[in-house]
Amino acid sequence: MFWEKDIETMNISEMKELQLDRLRTTLIRANSTPYYKQLFKDIGFNPSDVKNLEDIQKLPFTTKNDLREHYPYGFLAVPRDEIVRMHSSSGTTGRATVVFHTLNDINNWANLVARSMYMTGARKSDVFQNTMGYGLFTGGLGFHYGAEKIGMMVIPSGPGNSQRQITLMREFETTAIHILPSYALHLLDVFEEMNLDPKKDVKLRLAFIGAEPHSEEMRKKIEESYDIKAFNSYGLSEMCGPGVAFECPEKNGLHVWEDSFIIEIIDPKTLKPMPDGEEGEIVFTTINREGMPLIRYRTRDLASIYTDSCPCGRTHRRISRIKGRDDDMLIIKGVNMFPIQVETVLMKFPEIGRNYQIILETKEHMDDLTVEVEVLTPADDMRIYENLRKRIAEALRDEILFTPRVNLVQPGAIKRAEGKAVRVIDKREKA
Ligand code: ADP
Ligand code: ZN
Image 1 (tube, rainbow, N blue to C red):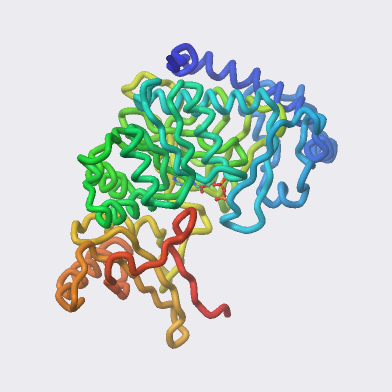
Image 2 (cartoon, rainbow, N blue to C red; image 1 turned 90 degrees about the horizontal axis):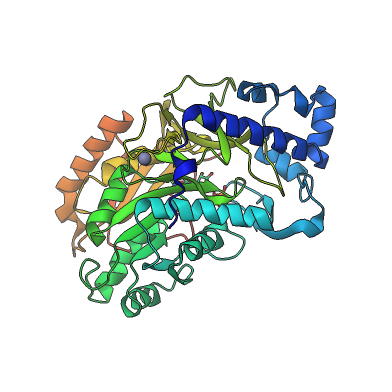
């Protein structure tokens, strides 16, 4: 059993007490890292100054850049030989950063992942196929240890080799899978090539989808195509990896595990706290980590906090699905837009296929945007899709307030990235 009832349904005032207690311990630990020790000295901060949770706001934010500048060991709070594992971010936005864990950290992380999966209904009897990358990336090992805690049989298939993924699913009757949402759609093409029906020819019932932004419509498409339940999993290597926030059976926001992380939402421009319920950048403080405590870490990820209580009974507050990173925002013809808005529109058309891409170019000194999208059924002459093309362009205009060029292509025509999907190709001339 992995329902940590006392913690998951802890009342708010008790939770605040627990957080304050753990925050204090964290700050004392942080004071023994080269980075924070210097910082605390520079700003005249003493961990014992912290009397309540709001006092955390007296401390500056920690950024990815700070991690890079103090690479590799500047944030280490324990002697190097207490560290049992290192991980690294996937480096989506530049040089990767490294994170170090003690044995307790690994164990706590596995508990969070186990708690998350159990919450969705995963049990010891499940056969769990983990298609995320093993290695430095946290998606593979993070889920692996969590699934083992529950006692599931784990198939550490790792990414790629799609036909073998499906064969494994069939031969070992996989019931739960951890998969990138973009890859879940791609696999549908492979099922088709193998003449198999994902609804009937495999025993899948649960999917954990995450590591990249995706829309509610994308989730629905995955759920319907496989006839499964799919749950959004959010995390980042700087906090541990997966197991930071996860959807419960209500599928209405992701519970942030507040016994391990303090969450703040700030305005990324003014750096001031956002009022509850409004969208901004997520900032996390680790409060249950020994090896590498991080204080007020700016994730760049955009979301809002839900203020209502969750019918599932868990008291840990929820965040909305991630809209993207603040640097995913595109400004085109003076209009701000996020790739996820395009996806939301595309996924509503049953005729569209399994991959799409946004291409930015400079034409006659102006930004020019093309949405390239695969159709579901191949055609000898793509002109038969002219009407669909127009309807998509109109629907996109309603969402992003200008009409992009829409280019429909054959199934499989768009090159797929090895790992996280690359949705935007920016070929604009730099001014
Ligand atoms: P990198 O920052 O190099 O991609 P990570 O592997 O640590 O490294 O990825 C964490 C990031 O992935 C998050 O900060 C977020 O931008 C994205 N991410 C993870 N899970 C989700 C999710 N469920 N929805 C949207 N984005 C996600
Ligand atoms: Zn809930």
